[in-house]
Length: 389
Image 1 (cartoon, rainbow, N blue to C red):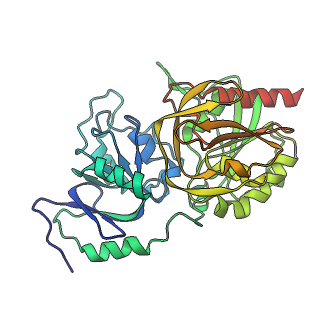
Image 2 (cartoon, rainbow, N blue to C red):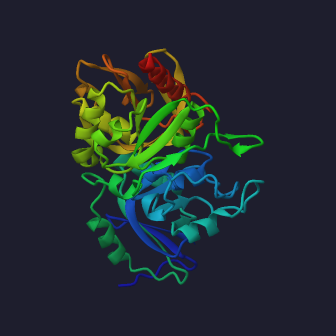
């Protein structure tokens, strides 16, 4: 059945309970099902929409104006580049504006269209955000049709039948299919993304959906990087004799990915090598040492999250993107809680008391502070140097 919507409607968001948000479609023509979250960042929309951690999610941007810096080929975060392994849709208060930035090589709307990201603009994003805050992240379908013809009951049924993220292993889709090396460092004027010359450490990155800027940050602290698929056995990793191992970010339920990843992570811990976990890597490290993870009602998505480093007493402004969290009350005695969210008191970091192993829930490669969390890469480099003797 086709329901008549107000004139000019070319896009809709249909929630599983049948609620409809009509507006103006943008980006790709088509439809996509996923979990709707909101992101409070004022900038970085291209990095957000290409972050593999947003796989199977529809991102609502709370900042009303998006698109003014355009897009470019350098700032894509995912390695593979396929839209299926990043955000499925994007919701804006206003239609994306034309770019006005010297680095832009495309506008946001055309870029989304090419990538297959379905967009919706012109809705009350404040109302949608409030709904998420009060009732949690809903399952929904976002749709864009130039003629404005939408079968709302069918879209609502599609949203209801979507499985959701709980129990879903998405790292197997986001990970690299083959091992590769990385040597690009952080961006700097005027060179851009340069290649550091001094790289004394060998680092293996377990790719559960790694972001490019994590690899760049590692390279800039002296790492020669080898990236391996998510299901690589620990024996194969250790056979490379790395100075350290990084457990990357990624999408989906950590307990589901942990079915095959956690036993290997335990072997990496037992090897005595320095291990650094980020986001999903943090959650699975916690599982590996005996803690639990749980699904959050609204998650943490944004670039203005205050986190306290309990080891130094300092508060840093960080970027977060996660819908699952480590249950801090389940941490065993051998694990120290190192970071905590000042928004809701949830766990944001751990370290083993007797091993050179630590992890954080937030993204130290991002720059909201702007450099508040980059010390974590230096901390990892220090552990590798210490392990060398």
